Image (cartoon, rainbow, N blue to C red; front, top):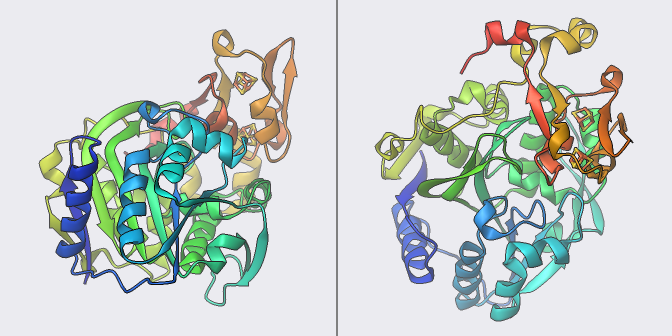
Length: 374
Ligand code: SF4
Ligand code: SF4
């Protein structure tokens, strides 16, 4: 059995967070190892330069409490991520993470240097370019944010580790793995390669709707702690009303035999007791019918079967961030407005994810809506 602690936590308050994390570790029967002289890498979600109240990034106080916890256990603590567009320093500064790193004497580590690692058990890849600190750290913690996501429907402990792939290589993977099954398999392989020792999901204020960047902050008053990312995500899914079949990484992990939902034991609160199921706004199922069809048919019918990114012209300021983030470069800025060429659009939704102005929404096709399963 893999234990997952699910605790109620209603505010970002340092002493409360510390007490809840310690209680969670006790509940899952996990004692921190002696980390004297070792390096611990905390990998929060620092997607973009967005303030804590926007719920885009892991809350800085969660990061601070974990830094202190590991420092007290003798470790040197690194905090790192690879934001989508901005530099880590800029994104961490706006997210409030830089301040807690400086205040605690931890170190912000850049993810630009790469180490190629073998992934012998990988189902999709046998090698991965991981950020050097991820490989060099003795102990890794995925410190995720509970959010909805246009492509993967939910982002938490496992999807958070996509940030361990430095910079533009993320876009290359989107191009190579344009089918959601493949992309989910890649995320599962990344999780296996990084093999985090501990995962903490900040769901105190999560994000619903058009996540992971332009959704609404939503109080979920929850903190999830486990030694396994898939198990933590399974519980987060139950919390907000997504079954394993609706979360591509869970589907992939179950199919690969990495996760058996029957062997996950929730300790602490029950997911149902939070009352979020049916009341937490989920993103549309962007793949619609595509999950039932083979790839060669799918490629011909992409425009009919999968949801597409569409402009919200009144919000677009023509900044071009979406065009920079589009892996196949099918976005142009015409007369200061975003313009899509759907012919080669791979439906990765990076544009929707990264537009800082909420000027791209996702439109589900009428055919997909007929089959949408929520
Ligand atoms: S859609 Fe968003 S990211 Fe793209 S140009 Fe408009 S405002 Fe900028
Ligand atoms: S237009 Fe948007 S969804 Fe399409 S490939 Fe580019 S970033 Fe991905």
